[in-house]
Image (cartoon, rainbow, N blue to C red; front, top):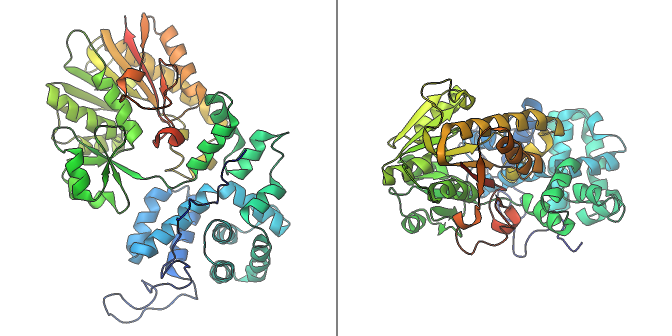
Length: 496
């Protein structure tokens, strides 16, 4: 198809190890000399700390159903890793998790046994070693020896087995393994893309359907899913200027959202602007769909806004800041108690009232009366297939069986939103998934069943002028490979 293979980096990109580009040596952290000059602690067998941290994060994801974006930062802090060491551990963790499906197919072939029959700690170590061999510039001898050392600590009886498997893996590059193991492009294009770009077949099929059957574009999307995404900040209107914020944090203004700032790296949670509530971390696509609701033309009163599924609070934070500038107030609803607390933290100081309740109780809850609100956002719970770049383990956890209960919930929430909005008011339905049944099917069914006349508003003019690839309308689907955002879907409805 001419698309770049998943392991091929852009020209000039480098994967650096803890002491330089090859990653053969490690700085001593918690398991060597104390960085502050204290006494030496017991040293683990020859496993450098960044690789050990990556292994522990990967194992936690597979063993405990943990999320890498939650466990890895804590592990990096605990081990005192920063700079190149932290970047190396992060690359190994996220890269191994993204490519797990293809790595497992290669290990199965190299081992001569199904990967699921390998002891879990050894299996995760082999995944980590195979990723280094096929997707980084770590020399083969360093990748093999460091992985065998790791296996010696987690599965001592399997060191010979691990050495043999990794040497077989090293006999081909990633293109050679894809050529050997992937189904034919001609007879099974979905199966070929799934193995070549390490996505489950059902997700590849869903992406292809959402892209109108264009398999070349599907390949570009899958390839982008395997890249490390940039960090986006939202400069809260009235509280921060995006250009000034970009200068303050060493970033750059976003391409599309008037509030977006791109970060090149670092820990955004440690920025003063985030700690002070002048900005928050939010994908540019999420900013665009929330802002679209706020800028959509509306006749009549415009002071009562509703976010029906507000947790963890990013869109509520942006809408709350916009509401403050326009003399409006936002009611933010969240059914989960801990997420409701996050919304309260995210909207502190803004004209936002947080309700810990189920958004489907519109009309039954006196604080959520029918026909009361002027603008309503439904950021519905979904499969999250649009943010697989940021949550690499999600592609392997989600199943087609997740769709029926989610789509039922989505329809119920959108129907509740249409009850909550006044005649002439606006509802924005948003999902971070391009799956057709979570987007077009849900919107069509809910608008048909709600019992009110509903008109679709063309969402394209509500996004910045000049944005490419917005389709024929009236709904909009954003894409990582087209727009550099998560794959956010937006439909705007007006109640008649």
